[in-house]
Amino acid sequence: MKRKLLLYFVISISFIAQGFSQKLEVTSRYEDRNVVFDATFDGTGTYTLVLSFSELQGYKSRSGRQAIINIPSPFSGNSIYKLTEIDGARTSTYRYSYQYFQGKYNAKPDENFPYLLPVKPGNNVRVFWLENLEVKLGKSVADKILGATFSYTGVDTVYAIRSGQVVSVKNGTRDRIIPEAGTVYYDEASQSLIEVEHKDGTIARYVCMTSGKSLLEEGDRIIAGQPLAVFTQKDDNQEMKVGIHLFRLGKKFEYEVIMPKYYTDSGLIQPEYGKEYVGASAKEIVEKELTKKEKKNLNL
Image (cartoon, rainbow, N blue to C red; front, side, top):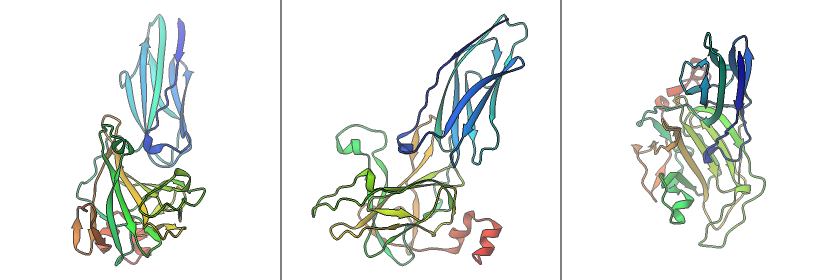
């Protein structure tokens, strides 16, 4: 019997994950009469691996030409998929490629889930939209609004809007250049990015536009209302700002923006552009996704 291996790789990382190093790699090996695919994963959080076969002769694949594989964190094993050789096949050939995406495939979040505002209860925050840069340049894009920008005055701490696991942390390497009055200027080197994966597969990406520093590390568990980051640079010309993208990985492997409802001192609301809100908290929201041990530690 003649065996032939044709192999190429396609690595795909969404714009949402840009700036972070490659986390997942797939290799293949022969085992008896079969082909076993192994994965190495050094990241934190859930990833979705798409293993595609452009050529498949003499082997059976239980998922056909495309296998969608959930890569959890922590990742305990190496073998993720197998091709079984067909009895009597004269030639066995396969060609494969793979892509991986941050997040749980086709996550189905609760649209009415109550999120907390990213401020300490009793403090004010003003809400604006976080728009896609291509919209500003006049280009047509699917998601014009990528999330919300929260503007702070007189406070220096960003709080978690929901409980979850910190999956990425990237602190800025320099202070932000102070713009002239009436202008806005942000650069990537001064931004701090923190990503938190929630229980339902959604991911919140906090972007400290005003220079800030994370209080947590990758892999940490965070609870709704817990301090997440602090602003490290005072800006007399602009309010301190944090942008929050909330997204999920959809059925077509595209990231879909979610505009959640927030709990305020006036109840659960869908924030409106330019309006100011007062942060609030409630026991039933904070304990919503806590373990029994966490509830005991917090006296809830």
